[in-house]
Length: 396
Length: 167
Image (cartoon, rainbow over all chains, first blue to last red; front, side):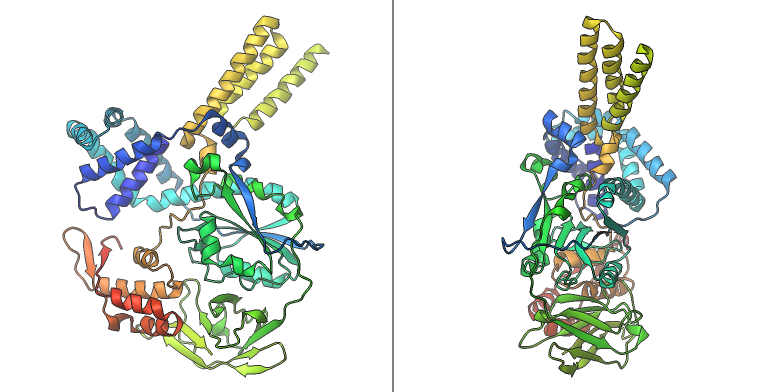
């Protein structure tokens, strides 16, 4: 049944791409590929582990720069959940699930179990034309309501996750379900004592993280976390790609980094994916001592006009993300002076999320470096192709 | 007293069994184990223990094999992308992963605007051809911020971006 669902998802994807080969051939090719996958069995030992000890599917891996351990001062601990919580029509989902059951019980699939080659599969389809047309009808239904199914699965994931996070809450972690990444950055900016952060988010095969509104976390997203942060945990798939895309290794002098790695016994099931069920494997991370540097890092700032139109704008410095402009709380955005290059520095001001804003017109931003030097940035604005909206402002 | 202790033992076993056993059918196994240990004579009690244990383990194993039928199936959702974002944005983002999000949006916007001016083909797709002037702003930005990527994008413009009919 599980493989039937995977098969249907892949077939719908194939059909949505407008496959040039005939539907029957595409159907058989996909089905035979799935059949090969299904021969990977789960052993009883693995099954019992999955059932009773899901935390053992993964283990936390620590990335650190140094073996030195200072006395770490425990501050506030935050868990940010960047998973979407879309609404769905339960009746529609139930209708699709019951149709899926009916389709799974068709004689076509009973006969297809014995098919190992394309010709055999095509012959079976030919002999069961009525069943096959029902399958095609189901594909259309699924395609038309794919967003509902996905919303339903997301909702179930969140339910399971919230139960798993109760352990963390008992340890003092603050759980925050955020709709977009700017909320996370604002909460971090507002709390001067945050020491541990755990981020739960989707990622893609390139290692890019997504927030609940499906915006990609910009490059260098963790370059300018508050200085009080000593531990960062990112709980997502494709963990090693995430490290590479966000250049986490460059920041290990600021904080210790932890990520999930699937145990070798379960690699054939999960590969580079990370099950939500196993998040409790990280419950003891906060008690581990972290590397703390006694050296306080110098703080630089950029200061904005009191221009309400700037609110929510994302700011990057040399492709290191600094944060979001929040005129209501402060006209200044602090950042680590070491992010400044001794040669050329380029600030980018842009919308990270799908906000569209009109041209920003005239405004000013001042850079304040550590020794009190002030510099007004020279700004250049780029508009969209229709010249109606703000796309990017570069400041140098 | 014995009856009360027996009932208490049953209640505790059932509670623990239901809390721990992830498959509903396994509860039957736990019940059998508990009842046989408490009520049955020695031989039947031992047999009951084995049979009950077997039911529990088998049902758990069956649960794993049929994940979508058990609550476990929902918990095993992966933190993978499966993002059903706008199709044009997805295409561009997949082909140019180094392109910043706001530029992906901008190129996708141009593609969609051009797609709106093009007729749908009988096979349900639209053919959109981007020219350099269409994304001049994007190329100008890239020449300043990511010059190599800008060159690549400019060279790729001769390729056609197929925009399938569902957008």
